[in-house]
Image (cartoon, rainbow, N blue to C red; front, side, top):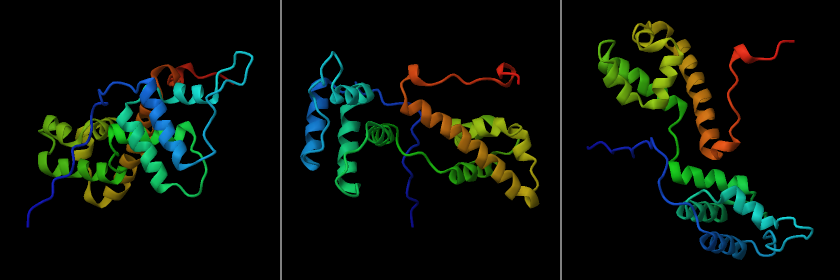
Length: 197
């Protein structure tokens, strides 16, 4: 029996060019054909206001066309009912298609413990490469590589829970960064800059 190779975990964002206005119109027309009568209007309401379709364009214009097409097809195939999706729903699906689905926090923690077994305390660079950037950041947030290597097996469940929480917090921040354009990501406030009550 041979091992089935897992697909590589994406480490960089896609470099595909963003969707053009024509490609966007085609994708939206396809979505409109699946959910008739529900499409946002391309006609501005007047008084210089943008059209509802312009709001969709603003929310999705930076994504690759192939990712948007895949997101719309997925939505059509999996949606319950005839409700039109929000731009955020399509954006989230398109980003997942563009960047790949992340492994679970449980899988990341398993990879960390496997790296401890394989490489030990004396090969941190090999462990870092094996674990990947997100897992390695979680290791650093939980007292570092030496700490992970010195964990006692009877306390492994407690340490695994700590690592899982660190992975989940980092993944949440990573997801927010991948879903939003840079100018819409709020800065991270350090504790020293917190307002004093």
